[in-house]
Amino acid sequence: MSTKKKGNNFKLLTLFLFLGTCVGDYGIGVGIGEGGVWVGGGGGGSPNSDPGSSPKQQTNPAYSALQSWKTAITEDPSGVLKTWVGEDVCSYKGIFCSGSSITAIDLNKANLKGTIVKDLSLLSDLTILHLNSNRFSGQLPDSLRALSSLQELDLSNNRFSGSFPQVVLYIPNLVYLDLRFNGFTGSIPESLFSKQLDAILLNNNGFTGEIPGNLGSSSASLVNLANNKLSGEIPTSFGISGSKLKEVLVLNNQLTGCIPESVGLFSDIEVLDVSFNSLMGHVPDTISCLSEIEVLNLGHNKFSGDLPDLVCSLRNLLNLTVAYNFFSGFSSECSRISFGFDFVGNCIPGKGYQRPQPDCSVIPGGSLSCLRIPAQPLTCAAILGLKATSSSP
Image 1 (cartoon, rainbow, N blue to C red):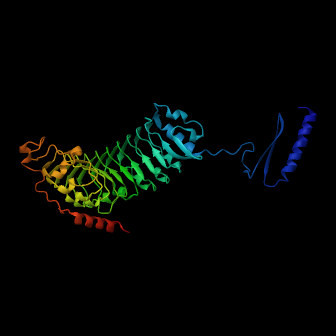
Image 2: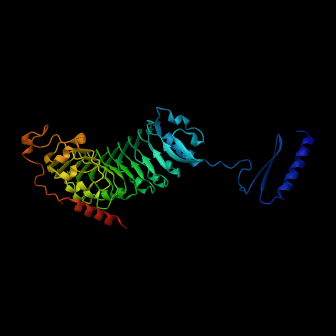
Image 3: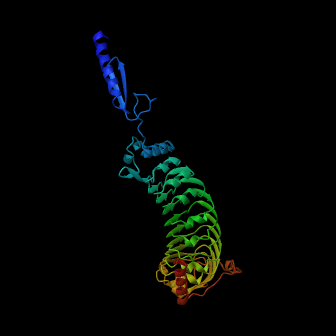
């Protein structure tokens, strides 16, 4: 370096040092290199910080969450995750945004294999999480309770296992829960039916134990508990709390005992399927109070006696299945449902396709004593009055 160039640099250095004493708290870094003099400025920097470094850019939480999840997905045959590159998360396949916030994830039928990571709790604006028909396994992270905006959770047709995922009970605004076709086991928590859910779908798992006694008080319009290993009786409080249930499916379990008379309180119900269990006794006359019912399936149980006339008189009934029970008769009213009336495999004299007579000589549950309330219009009116009273604040 020439003497003249060194002199010029020295003059510049003196000038910048002078300026540094005039600007107060704003630090100025000065240095001399082969290329001359450089100056770096910053607001309120630490006296120990490197004057040549710049503040680290904060990583987008949504980007961090999805990248963490991406590493936990081991198989992606459809190549969905190939689009999960870069910080523009709203451009990722299956990710939907409002503005710059992720509000929905829909990866239905993507055939992904992996687990759910705790980092998904960072998606604070997420309202919909649909993962139907994949190969996710393991359990749900407890951190998901932080998803305060989540309304719909669909994990159906995957490989989740273990006990009922308690974390879903703490997601405050959840209204739709679908856990169908997984490997969940153990009991169903009673608190599930105290949540303000509109749909509860738990069918095709391995749940055991009894149906929680507060089923009838659920705010849901649809409850599907079919194809599990539930045992015991249908709760005697069935319907007493003035439920708005429209569909109740408990078929293919191991239920025993009677259908409680309180079933008549389900005045809004449209579908009731209790088939493929071991229910016994007579069919409650109060079923005739179900004025909105369209589908009633009592098949493949051990019911006996005559099918109540009033049941077959229900104005909206389209399909009535009583096949493979031990009924001994039904009225002419039932014949009017010829399009959807299945009564084969019973003990009805003079009808075809019935059980052999020896099978009808001993009626299962003949000693079972079920409460019986003879139904008539006044009975149904009283039931509706009871329902209105129980549902009032």
